[in-house]
Image 1 (cartoon, rainbow, N blue to C red):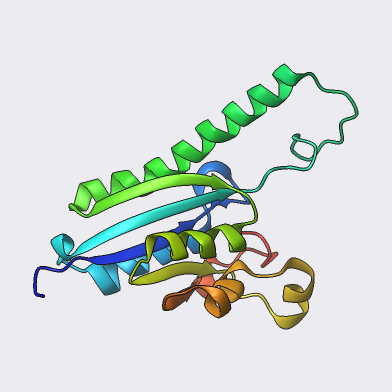
Image 2 (image 1 turned 135 degrees about the vertical axis):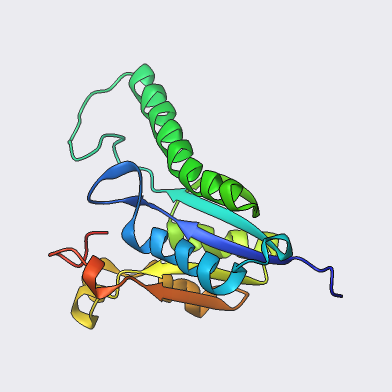
Length: 175
């Protein structure tokens, strides 16, 4: 039993302020907290799973309405999104490699809260770590929170890490 590895899933996303390949404030904070408070110097006792869920844009274009697009346009957008997601995950994988923590990372598409819970059910990690923007009740009604949904529905313990007050942007919805 002493040789058993603890499997930790960490859900990560890109920064809404800086965009790809930068991790969001809450994702970076959740990762740092996991390393500093859970893993510490016992790197061989943990296996981290990084999941990045990309939300498909309704029309395939960022911040732009489109009426006409060729199939090649959609193919190029999917490839661009995949590359951006890989660069985001590269940040976390490189950090784990630097400190000697075994990890795996992958990208899925869909509704983040649903996909995260599905992946928890599929992989059965010992616990899930998610970042939280720390939104107030009014903001939650309009924006919703992935962390709260996961806390209620994931089939494993969930640790939610709020971002630090000094890291909160002027608009708390930003991350």
